[in-house]
Image (cartoon, rainbow, N blue to C red; front, side, top):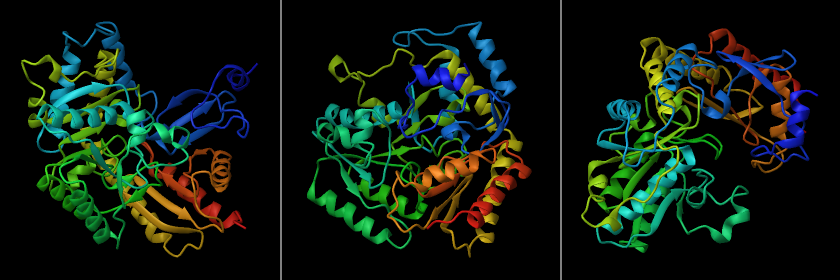
Length: 428
């Protein structure tokens, strides 16, 4: 029995309707931008294995550092104890995070990183003697799959089964190009309507990932943050996807003049090696939890909080990220995406071509209304898999987000396959 068959007997896969999906592709090894299946087929991982892989698969430097840590300390409870990898990682993260970040709280993944941020912001106001319980978020937002993270995400098929159990959130329009004024009008209207009751505004800076790789400008986000700060509303930057170079800078917030109060991190933090999350905050927020009253403690934690092995992987990934050649590759990928957009401007198949750093996205116009479940998504996926390229469309939105180690040759192969789709596939 091959791995795919054995999997089909025992595994439940995420975001997968097993009755409508074919057998999973069993990957047995990886190297750089490539993944190899049990039949020896090679695939270009053009989506960084769900946006987590920064430097390529089975990177020897990260593997070496993880191995060294495993032989020193694999884990220790993080309540009442600490260790060098966690301390060093926090110190180093604070040197590249947006201005004002002062403390790091570790968790397990992107959903828990945002869950921590929301709980932190709500309890901050309670500890300060205010009862603020409303959160502002963007329409089309996605912040994770735990209950708090689902609540602050857009209501969609992802959350329908749990809609009656989610807390109410104020959703404002995404400030797409030409619609910025409406977003600013709505947020000010909501602030006036819920006077004194809004705890925080959470946002994916510049790029909304699962919502369809929707992009907006830094200037309007600066204005939104400024409005919130003037009205005593905390701001939370969900950099789970956009962090660690994805947008062309260390963090998407680096494009801003204003700084958020809280930042959420995960995905690329370990270079794609293992699950890990972190949430940073300002000293002002941290100080609100310091008290002789134990009831003001932040009661949140995970069994594997600050796992030393994950911290070691994150430190190794940061070593690679900070190398000059890595930042050069990020800029080269970004430039290649921009060139592809210019070349494809007159395409009759692809519309709204856009990029932000190493993220390239485009929409495919179809007769039916676009959605995550659009049948075109599975057709696109199969088309590229047959050509040895892993692209996982969001409905009729196609995007490319490769590891930074991808060569110009392989990136051109991805572009060529996209152009081939435009020529070969009928959308009728």
